[in-house]
Structures are given as C-alpha cells and as structure tokens.
Image 1 (cartoon, helix red, strand yellow):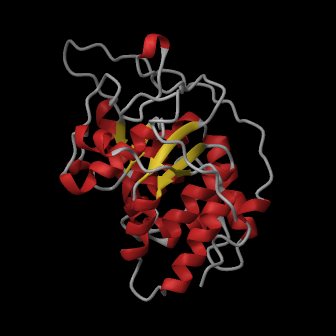
Image 2 (cartoon, rainbow, N blue to C red):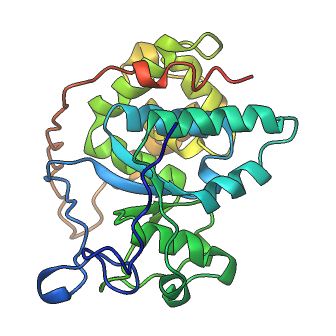
Image 3 (cartoon, one colour):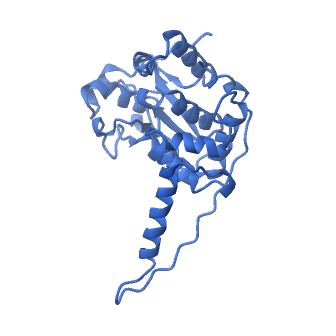
Amino acid sequence: MGHRAPRTPECDPRRDVRGRRRGVGGVPESPPYSPQSGRPERAFLDANVIRGQQTTDVLLSLADNDVFQPRWTEHVIDEMRRNRPPGLSEKAIDRRIGMMNGAFEDAMTEAPPQALQDEMQADQKDKHVLAGAVHSESDVLVTNNLKDFDPPSSGPNAMRVEGLNQFLNRKLEEDPQRVQQGLQKMLDRSRREPKTMSALIDTMAQGEELQGFAQKLNTVVPPEQRGTAPVLTANERGSAQRAAFEGVAGPGKPQAPASAPEARKAGDSKSAERMKGAEQEQ
C-alpha cells in the first residue's frame, strides 16, 4: 500500500523550523480539539498501550467508532514490534501492524524533527514519543509510562499525558454510549472469546492493564451486562461503604445536595468493516 511522501519542515510552509504547525503571525498554533469541537480527540499512542492484543483491540475498536483519532510513528511501531508479548511471532505482529496501518491510514505520523525532540521534557529514551505527540498535533499522549514525561502545561510543546485506564475512563465519561457501541461492535465481529459484554468486563478485570477501565465500565453498562469478577464486586462494596459514610453529615456540617448527572450525547455509529480481522490475529 502506497504512502504519501512526508513533508519536511524545510518544504512545508505550514510548519516552523522545529516542525510545529504555524498559526497567526507564524506562532505555532494549538490543536483545535475541545469536547465540543467537530472532530474526535486526537490521541498519540505509546508502544506500551498497543503492545498487547486486548489493549490494541479495545483502543482501535473505540477509534473505529470515532471515540478518538489514533496517531503513532514508525519509531513507536518499531518499539511495539521489539517488545511484543512472549510467544507472539514476528510474522503475527507484522500482520497486526499492517492491519492497524490499513484501517487507520492517517495514524502514521512523520518522524518529528530532531530539534523538536531535543526540546522535549521527557526521559531521553522517550523524547521521540512526546515529540511525536506534539508534531502530530495530538491532544493527548496515552502511555503507561507516566513518570518519564513532564511536558509544560502551556505553550507550543504543551501536551496532556494520561495512563491507559485514565484515558479510557475519561472517554467513557464523555460519551458512554459511543464507547459501549464501539466495544459491542468489537464483540459482534469477534470469532473468539470473550463474545459478551459481561465476559469482556470480567476478562479485563482479571488483568492489570485494563482493570481500572473494567471497574468503571461495570458501573455504566446495564445490570444484565455487568461482570462478576471478584475485583468488580469488591469495588462495588467499597463504593457502597464510602457512599454510606459520606451520606452522614458531621456536626454543624450541612449535607450538600447530590448533583444531577450530565446528559450525554451519543453520535452516529459508522461501519466497522475496515477493522474486520484486526483482532483475529493468532
């Protein structure tokens, strides 16, 4: 499959010498995303969140349902290939990578200029990751290696950094229906277990990578779709106990009224044909 030749900062009038997109008066502009904007949030995915099969399936199934737009670089993909799970062959991981790039043709981002990488406030080995997020004009960097990133909170190199569970839980809060639709489509096209929402939640809860998301999702889905893994029920009991204590106002402390849940708007779903087979890798 052919690829467009990447623009370099020297030949791209839209970017400054460090590869950042120019704004008014030549000042690098900020990404246009907001929760109310017309496009899904753009998320740069670090290699450690797309290394495993299930995390990749969940993330890209949500991306396929327009929950967010994925971005990565060749360097990140190379790290993913080198650190693939034990027992997964190079042929199998290359097949998955080919499907990822085929399903999301805009996800592959050109390598960030070295000058931009040098500016990044991150561990030396991870500067290319943060630079890739900035260079691709992403709104958030999703990584399980939070301690190695310390980007500024404002300015042209500002970047939100979230862990995998934190990111997924936030997207679930922002648009619970779209997230659940994306997961259900993943289950519907799968030829292997898990094939139901409750089984998916239990499977995620039993591991570490998606356990936090499983706990949050279990409180959002209808009762008949909830998982039954011990970690899920223990979490519910703990929440109930905390709620009971929080509901008792101390002496001289009036109890605050509960706030009404914010209404959520679910967008139109689109075909998931382009993702067929991505999670069927052996």
